[in-house]
Amino acid sequence: MRVVVLPVCLLESYPHVLLKYDFRVIPQTPASPAVNSSTPSISGASNKSNMRSQEFYLTPYCSPILPSGSIHTVCEIIKGSTVLRQLFDVKKEDEENLENKIDFKGHCRFIAFGPETDICICALYIPHISSLELNYINQPDPPLSRQHSKLSYVRTLSDPSMKEIALAYGNPGGEHLPATTFVSRDLVHLWISIRDIRHKLVHIDRVLKQPGILSKLTHVESWVTSYNDSVTETTTKTETDASLRLIKARARTLVWDIMEMKNEILYPHPVHGRIPNFRNNPDCSTNLAQLEEFQRARVIEICPSLAQEHLRLFSLAEGKVLLTPAPSIDNALFYKLDPKFLHVHDLSRAATKSGTAALGTIVNLTAVGNLHVDIVVVASVVVNPITGARLGKGKGYGDIEYAMMRQLGACDDTTLVITTVHESQLLDDLPSSVMTEHDLPVNVVITPQRIIYTQNKFPCPKAINWNDIDNETMLNLPVLKEFKRLQQLQQEKSK
Image 1 (cartoon, rainbow, N blue to C red):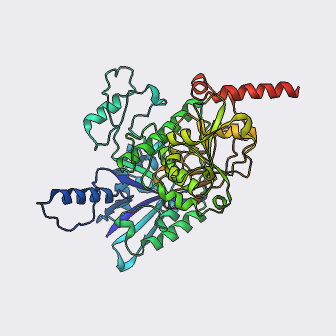
Image 2: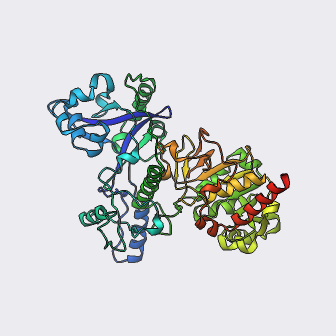
Image 3: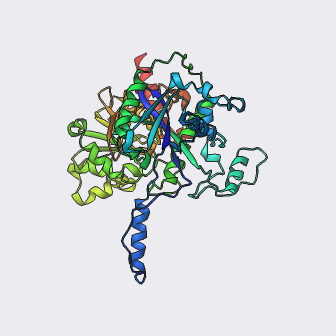
């Protein structure tokens, strides 16, 4: 008989459980037919196919029940995990009386499954602790700015020497960092929605796939939803600008690390510092086509990232007028591509960055207000699929471009903001504090597997905050200078 420990909490009224990726375990590949060793080319193709089929699975903490009983077994599991110790605030002096500290009577529910399986679930309700906090226990914090970082990343397994280098990172005395270093992770802990597990939207291991367990998770879900905790919830602390930058850096780095270790990136590598060009991104186009808003839309603005290249091609093939940002032109905000004036053989080229510049029409700032953009597709590194909070790669160009469109009258409250991402880019507990009134949230999240409508907890920016625009941004977005000049002229005329 085995016991599965499931820490549970409520996130935005949705019950979640804490699961983990164990990157020390090499993923299993499905059994393949025997291949004649005398044909190396066929064998090589088979190995490549097996590599593609490798999957890392989310798994719970699980252990055979000790003779001393299930509660004692759960306590031993908690004592043996650094993350669970932090989750339950277990100190050295608490270990002997851990059963009393955790309060199994008031905060726990055991669920047995009878003869059909050898599993019993121990669900433990706790106040939420951010997955960002849990995943940075004994880990060096990422650099707040990657432009000046000497750290780059490669895919490799954990290595004690790498850990020593990583711990030296950030130390003022650590001057001699190697050119290529990977801050490796053995385990990654994430809060996963029970609803997503039940609907099989996440990859789970054999323990959770056993007969009856998925149906029993419904009982855990209803128990957590109706749970009336008498303990006062921890109030959200006020974050300083420095701590907010650290939260954002942790969230981005966590997602980049996971996607590299799970081999979910097509190219380029490393993904760190970039918008992820994730596998199966063309499937997002299929899901986008299901939206009524897309079917009715006439003008769509799509970011120029590689992950959205198929989306741009699909939109053109569906007869939509496509707008793509033109950041290097002094007095223009977009390139405009109208499929009516493109040859069918040019559509694929038009969807690329170079093709957009060659085949598109420049839309000057003064002409932007003549358009109405029905859908904006923005790139993201991390997204909270519940609230709609998102993080880009840290430059904020998408937020600025939307704010300019809004001020020029090309966008309004009817404009739908969408992002297309991989499932690994979803972080249910990305804190709302990362969003300001000048950051662009999303209404809809599209992954290769599904469409998610967010709760729309944040308003879209309506104007540029010039206090956030530094010299580097002005240089990289020269259109800002012309936009500011036009705004000043308009203000002078209104006086």
